[in-house]
Length: 104
Image: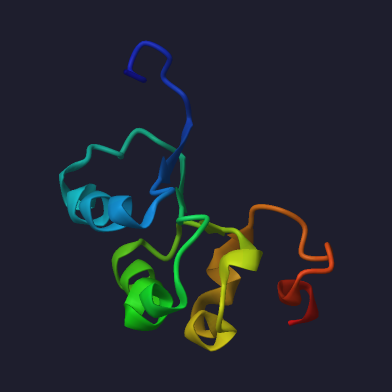
């Protein structure tokens, strides 16, 4: 689909929780070498249970560290799950909007 346009960058998006595992599992099979910049957009909504069950661990273990992980900061329940790699997370909106994420 993108081949005729040859963009230099690509954001892989798993915008719903049910899309995360299949996309992460497919990563080794994808031909991404031609892209100079890659990022991964994490789900914009997940439950506290899904976060506790290892969403952060899954992303940080399977997504290359060179790729920013795009997050909605107001979706995070416990920043303790994410602190180890916050340098790799890019907020998808400003952190100063009055949400609890703005206080961390």
